[in-house]
Length: 288
Ligand SMILES: CC/C=C\C/C=C/CCCC/C=C/C(=O)SCCNC(=O)CCNC(=O)[C@H](O)C(C)(C)COP(=O)(O)OP(=O)(O)OC[C@H]1O[C@@H](n2cnc3c(N)ncnc32)[C@H](O)[C@@H]1OP(=O)(O)O
Image 1 (cartoon, protein in one colour):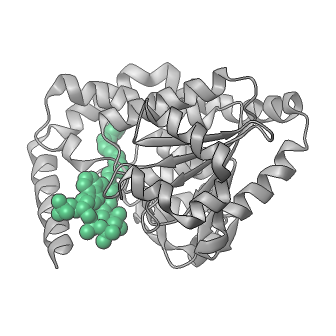
Image 2 (spheres, rainbow, N blue to C red; image 1 turned 90 degrees about the horizontal axis):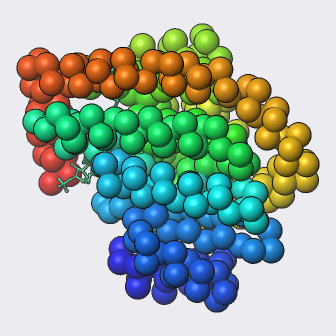
């Protein structure tokens, strides 16, 4: 959907109001892939991922997400962030597989470093963060969701760290993010088996906090945010940082090693072959 079409959507207009559409427009001049609407009254920013067709995370999109997070973190009026998608079927399809297929090493390295930055920035955000998961959310999409403090998901979609099903390994910080939400045992089951869970299954293990219908997902996220923002920021932020810093420090200490592992792993012939088959199947499925 084009930006013009997006702004014309009656639901979006009603939800945001004229003033916010204006703010959204001015920020989209910086990136049309990440749409931001910061409500000056509440301090809540709604951040819509908008990279058609499926919000897959390539280098440029990740950089845009990171820049958006930096801007919001530097804006003292901003206290909460709701992460969602402009595509009402796919929250985020995870990493752009094309970044990993027949890659140039420099770009692959930059890509991974940028993903690490996004993870540290969102997972450790000073803001109260809520994922309004309005579509499928595999792998890197699930990672973004587990970076947030709270997850509200629309019924009848799927979410999970499905890397092993693709013959790849979820990095330790993907696993740490999941473990922080659902605990060791459920993470072990979900990650080793590469489970893609339905919204209901995800809700049963606590991977999502609320299951809702598509029409109300953003309103529910706004309502939930109100309760988070009743807590004094310093108390909430310090509590969050106490819980999340150990995992962030773990990645900081092993950043270069993690990049090296990733580049070595992805450039193996066997992994390239597996990715090639996977892409072929995705394309075949998309054509049907
Ligand atoms: C010590 C070890 C250290 C390091 C370890 C090394 C490791 C590697 C770690 C890597 C971690 C990886 C994380 C990831 O995120 S990998 C990506 C995983 N994502 C997926 O598998 C999702 C695949 N997509 C889907 O399942 C469906 O597309 C989806 C999201 C359910 C949406 O379905 P639908 O609406 O029907 O859309 P289509 O399938 O028709 O797709 C439309 C279009 O988009 C293309 N596409 C889909 N997903 C991706 C993607 N992730 N990347 C790039 N492109 C994608 C699809 O091919 C179609 O394209 P077309 O041109 O044919 O129209």
